[in-house]
Image (cartoon, rainbow, N blue to C red; front, side, top):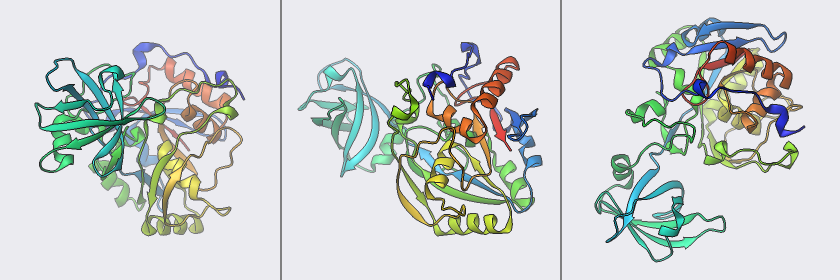
Length: 341
């Protein structure tokens, strides 16, 4: 399979630049994966497609406000840092722009000295390792100074940081939001519970690799990024009980899907575990755990397009995306949703 097989034409004005005021008012395209039938709804209608005894699985990761702007002490130029991951103590691996302004030995201050960092080393791929010094709690300082690391295709500044968090976000560590979950409200989740539908949570910390384009012609040559996940004993028990009783596992987002499929055995059962996954799901893959999928509309030629194509077929997904374009659906992180039932 070629990367170009997962291309579709998307007008730029359909890329959502801001979230809707009400999360659940986004549009919902419902696709029957068996026959390709399509319905056009709103996200609040999702409850109509969920049955008593089903389990809906959500990723409760929380996005780190990981974009910081600082300057070398005594210099006025602005340097942008994007925190990738904490390596040890208060040393973080970061992406820096412009990199030439952050060399080993340079000291950077943020927020007029509220946070100070020393560049201690440079990685093979140009990332900078910075050791932070501060008074107080790092996460509280970061919450004051940091901005949300919005995807590169969003050009408008986000006024409310919480709109790039799900209402059930809990465990901080992601560089990007699990955007399929942004459509849920507390009220909608309560209605789902009241209908007798189980809600279970996994954690997968989304890395920046989710935005990296596939640069190879043959998708089998693509090196998939690795992301950290955690699945509790309680969640494993809920999912396994649902599978054994004939209920559906409805995965919210590609991050949840990758986690569940990483753990699924030949019977579709999972176990309590934490670790790193680099699973690459593309057409031909046989799903073991996930029966239905709630997801947003993804970038052309991305690994996420390949995953949703595996859930139905490449042709069906391309046809569906073209219909979504014709009907002016909003695309990507702040866009509308699709339910593949």
